[in-house]
Structure formats: C-alpha cells, structure tokens
Length: 238
Ligand SMILES: [Mn+2]
Image (spheres, rainbow, N blue to C red):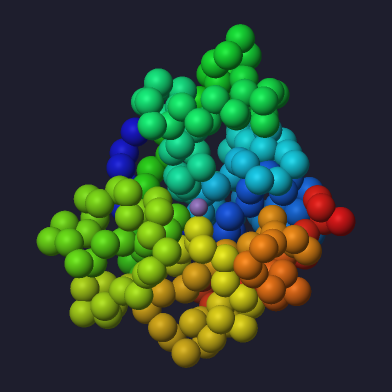
C-alpha cells in the first residue's frame, strides 16, 4: 500500500470526485450511471467511508470493485470507517468495538473474518492523492504540523479544516467526512476557497439529532475541471 499517490496529467474525459457513500448503494449507482454518466475515459475519485451507517455496505464495495474490474478508472481513498474496520480486523484493542461490525455487516465477514476481497481492497487504500491542481483527502491535513503530509490521523478524522493558502502550492483541497449544507459547498467552489468540502451527508437524509436534515441527504459528485457540482438525493433510505 502506498500512503499517497501522485497523479500527473489528465484523462481524456472528465475528472470527478464523489463524497462519503456510507452504504447508500442505490444512490451511488444512480449518481455514477445516470447523473454523471461515467465513461471509461473519465477518472473517478472516491473520498472514502464506503461502509457503515447506510443499508448496503457490501453492495457499495462490490460495485466499486466491479467498476474497476470492468475497466473504469477509479481512485478510491481510505476513510476513517474503512481504517477502523481494518484495525479491528488486525486485532488492535481500542478498535474492538468494531466487533459490532460482524453483526452490522454479516455479509462482508466469513467465519469471523473480513472476506479477503474486501480486506485487500480496503487495505490497499491510500490516504490522499496529489494532482497538478488538487489534493484529495478524506477529512483534511494538519497544516499546523511540520509534516502535514505524514499525519494520517488528521487525514482521516479532522473536522476543523481551513488550510492556509501559502502551504498549498496553488492547489485546492477536496475533502469529505464532515457533513455540510449545500449552500456552503457551493460557496467554497464559487468563491475559490482553498478547500472544497463535498460531504452533504447523503446518509442523513431525513434523520439526525443535530443537523437540519432538510439541508442534507444528497450524494455529491464534483467535476474538477468545470468546477461543477452534480448530486443525487438519497434513494436508499426513502
Ligand atoms: Mn468520515
């Protein structure tokens, strides 16, 4: 596994990023096939958090693997939920709460272990991608550190991310992890802010203790070259 991947150049087609899917397979598939109409000339980045919370974690993993096997060019990232699941599988004690996963997602476990196909995929996921014009990461970077590109915990977990432009080499950071309302996403894109939050809390459609869920519930895809947002309202939970 590489901790990060540098990707020079561009595809023939478009470059998209899709935010936190969280087991919402039907929503994800509709976004990919009907809303953006992904082609084999495009690149598709995924921000991590494929599993947990929503109803169909296994189907999301299967669909990602299927697209890659069919020859679509996907660049999936590691989210904190995949990382926790891997730590659980490796027996790290503080993550033993993920014992619950065997009951939450019995279909990705076999005889108490994560099925190899899913384990190998999750274990191969890098923490960020660096492109000519963007950094892509699940949660963000720790720019207070001398070595922001080595702090993996922050890449997976931070919720207070406001990058200083002088450290970004003119690039913008695309990230998910922390649900934000659609006008906030659009403002970051339109005003050219250094970071673009892309998680509109697709899995929180209609139910959350803290958030105003009328402002959430869409799975977003960002066209990185035309700076355009596409979205699909959650169809897994409705
Ligand atoms: Mn997350």
